Image 1 (tube, helix red, strand yellow):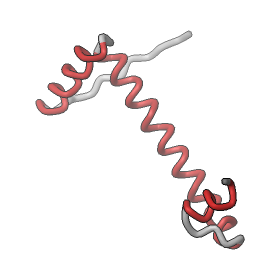
Image 2 (cartoon, helix red, strand yellow):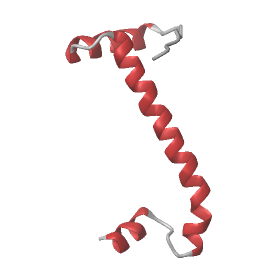
Image 3 (tube, rainbow, N blue to C red):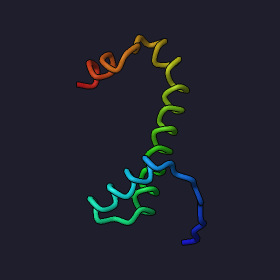
Length: 73
């Protein structure tokens, strides 16, 4: 698997949080950052898909998550 390097600047607070998370999890800082980035990109993708389908859902009466849960349950 080909990899690339990303360099980012962290403020002091974020740096401390990252270091603490790495110590608590036993993972290195890069692993924590990769997981956080992967998770955020998936959230962004989900939100983009949700925005695309909302007009279709609304046209069928699905206005809230509760509407969906009611019909799925």
